[in-house]
Image 1: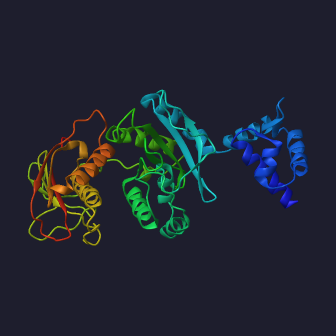
Image 2: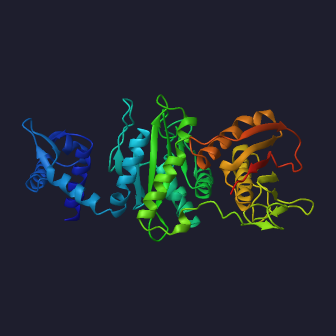
Image 3: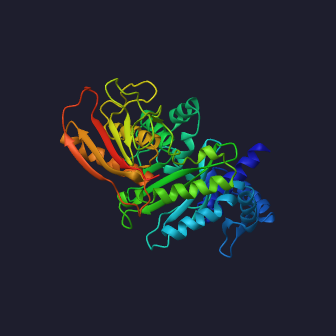
Length: 400
């Protein structure tokens, strides 16, 4: 009986790829035509298979009805639907919702682009675990042991020149995704498609699904796709809130009094936070006087240990450094939108493109498209630690 069920399921899977003749199906599953015919007749009686006038077989209406019922039983799809539709209407680009089940990432909803150039995908299609933004979001929510197990079992098919090549690269990417709260696929699955994705959380705070925006590069270049990240994050937060996710899964700027040491805000006030590395005794992490907030130069250090991270990786060091700067700005009562100047220090001109890419991603995450971008100066210098490739300071004007 189990062999019969397996063969029937294989027939349905083959028909999911397109119409087939009896001979084709017999050859594909490797059994005699009479056996395949008996299976098809049973499936046809249950309306899981349809035979046309040319004696070619297709998936039947009974299977479509079952698939609709399966989708309706996914609560997160129903909850997220109005937010996905709104995101699709606002951007005009393809929007997907994907879930992780049985070791696979599957698309469970899709809203098509209104542009003539579109990506091929469909509900029920599996997404590559190592090369899609939705998969990265879903895998980043796994505990470390789970991430390692999944990463070690993947076949790293090189779809494009940008596809991640192995477990080490994927695990590093998942760490980045977990820290910043969204993922990207920069032409990793298809050479002409860029994609960004964010988590939708359930009432327990776990990632129940991933929502994404996918855009062909002939419609928008990669840098402009990153400008869609604030809208994407707003959609994910709204869907998570409707799913009952705890408030701490939707961070906002800290209150204006957080992290202050000193007198009133008309005086010079020290800003301190555990979200950035502890300062040396000679200087403060940040100082605020009135609305002016100055952040000391930060490096790519772990806030908890002070260790310098990501040796040799300028882009990763830049991301970590900017997050340290942001933590101090927020402890002083501001946000990235309040920053009027970032000053970046690099050791080599060759590092400028990687730094610039990380900087663009950071702004896309923390600024809405209509907000004014801060000024920036880049200086090439020698830095105090040999492994330190970047240092960044900032000045903000905080009106709250």
